[in-house]
Amino acid sequence: MTAIELLDIIGQGETSTVQFKELLDSPDGIAAEMIAMSNSKGGIILFGVVDKTGEIKGLSTDQIRSYNLKIGNIATESVKPSIFVTTEIVTISIGDSQRNILVVDVKEGIAKPYKDNQGRIWVKQGSDKRKLTDNNEQIRLFQHSGLLYLDELVVPNTSISDINTEKVNDYLAKISDDIDVPNEQLYTNINLLKDNRLTLGGLLFFAKNPQRVRPVFCIKAISFIGNDIEGTSYRDSVDITGTIPEMFDSCMSFFDRNLLHTQQGQNFNSVGKLEISPIALEELLQNALTHRDYSKNSPIRVFIFDNRIEIISPGALPNSLTIENIKMGNAVVRNPLIVSYSSKLMKYRGVGSGIRRAIKEEPGIELENDSSGEQFIVRIPRQNKEYISTQTTP
Image 1 (cartoon, helix red, strand yellow):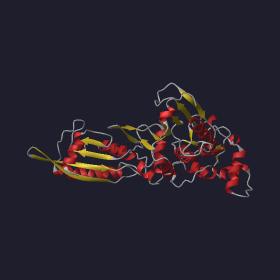
Image 2 (cartoon, rainbow, N blue to C red):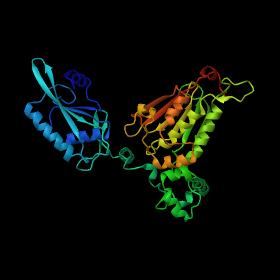
Image 3 (cartoon, one colour):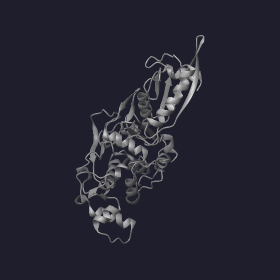
Image 4 (tube, rainbow, N blue to C red):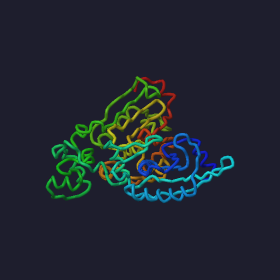
């Protein structure tokens, strides 16, 4: 890092990824800062810069030597599991003096959640940090590390009586010709049942009524009049419930009845084609249902506006995935059990090609990874907005 680059960073003030420390006078505080950065998006700690004000004081040679040793010890002994940090000395000229800043680079961790010696978990909150106490937030950190898969956990207040045996039989017919095992053992073998309770994945694929115990795991679908989410007029509004395959089918029907069927170069006697590629809609809707974050008690939202469609999934992209990654076909499976069931019971391949296939069908698709709002948004432009805007009924 050059002095000019560092001055520019200091000039912008403290952020969630930049912290100022005049001195290393609180090893526990520095450990908490490292933990918060490791559990979030990483960042840098600048020693020799006054907290809040950004005044550049600098460090002596002896301080730098001592701080380097202490920082290594903190990263090894006060962060659990230990982390690896790198340090760099950058010299800034201020007037006639040379002031040395120690830059400590903390990467986003791959073994979240990181804790201090008292077992406390810290995360970033803007330019500050906070202790994590919410169970759902802790679960998300375990998900990021691959130590826990929410869809494999049992759902309280469920039992074998909640299972729709017909749905299970349809699934078994697709995976094996002959299974001679008692029902309870069979349900356990396919990860539908654990300790006489349904797993979340089992609930969402094989329950008689999944929303009895997880009412928000549904799709809120609205076809608005106009282009404003704050609008008060709509053509169609429905809460879509049921198992994941049932919700998929119902939402595709919602698209079919609320989108235009246009000629698209066919002769006059042909039945109109859906204005948006059904292939793109299928891929994007399946992605939302299979890859959403089920630790967030929120529904998937599907909005049809006059000029666009929006599919909003709870949870930002997991494990440092980016929009550029997924456009190239990269994938991180957040819900492996749901993905496994989907590959047998839906039009789902599970090879990371869904987004690429959707964009090939509809090149105008926009993707937004909203990490601050913890949601992933897909926007599909509608090509017939001039006609649609004149309509007030389906």
